[in-house]
Length: 215
Image (cartoon, rainbow, N blue to C red):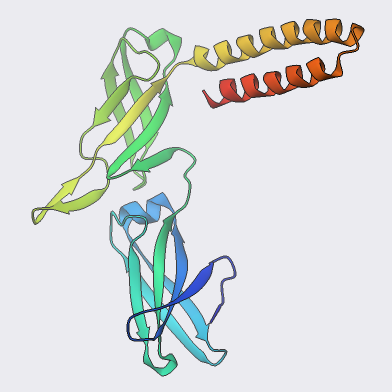
């Protein structure tokens, strides 16, 4: 089994009938998963059997969903497994869509409008009232992913998480303070010719910086 697209990793298995099952990743953006799309993949089996597959992705499709096709002439099946590509702004959690928005100092205790471009291409203006604090979540009903519940069409929510400008500033100040203390510490350790202490100090400095950056 040879895929024309080298980026798609594939593996083989066998079903109960003894036929080969080829599994390959179908990587999609959040936009494609939200709106739905049609994908075409051309695959060659056993070096001679070539097939083109048309895959209809429904709106709200979840990661891990399999699209199965039978290839009788090759005595095998192929399963395309949906994988979600990372997004620069949005994050999917179940049927909800999460995003982080920074609120300026001037709007901390007033009404603020969040300009936001949704996955469907529409530009939204979400109005929320203060006070705002780090981690505050603002739910926007019905702007998440579509799904079916008890035979009815439903939608998840868009959850906007508030970030404040001073969060990054506080992290930077703490890191700079730690650097100053570490440099003084390293200087004293260097005078005492303590290489082990220097090594542990550098490790601690790296771990603290990583923790601050992740926060």
